[in-house]
Image 1 (cartoon, rainbow, N blue to C red):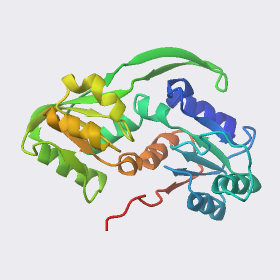
Image 2: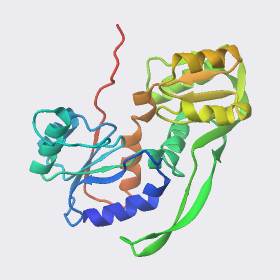
Image 3: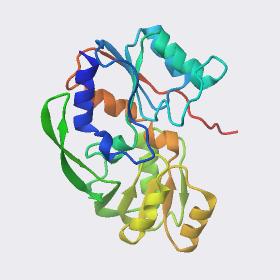
Length: 270
């Protein structure tokens, strides 16, 4: 399947226009005219992920976090970023990144994580938008839908402790950090994967607890003093399922080989 056609399908699902303005998504390395027979999905384009792609003969890497984020003034072997880009080019491996447009898209990563938690209830997309966008690779108009935050209203109340245990079990985690009384009953749950704390202030009056990663000390302390409930799943831990989501969605139109590369958690417990 040509890379151009794959990009056309990906833009139907996760259009670049719904990404944050500061983000850098889309085709970052590669030639749209090339044929793709094997893909690798990863959260971060680490050097180990690149080496895995080279070893397995991968034609395309799809990463969640952008492989190239800030400006690059030199591409040499003298720095890590340069080494990775050179290795990708030398091995003719394309890189396509889907970041906040995957988080925000309807049926994107936020929805996928809620799906994995197996909580009964209804999900609302906060700041929802819909628009029509011409997809020139597919020569048609796509209906794009998304929104920044998800709020799930459970069918029945549960305690914060039960929610924490469900998160650990269904996401395969040893622990999560939380703030507030673990015995408090909750029903309305807000969620943004990754480091989504900037979104919680807009919805704090509409939810009982907020789930995200990378919570900072002072914003967490403020929430604690105000009587709020927070759960810090972890940045990696809240987004590593990106590879599973890509496998599910891309298998609908791509029949080549797909490899999931999860890498390693950044932090270790001492």
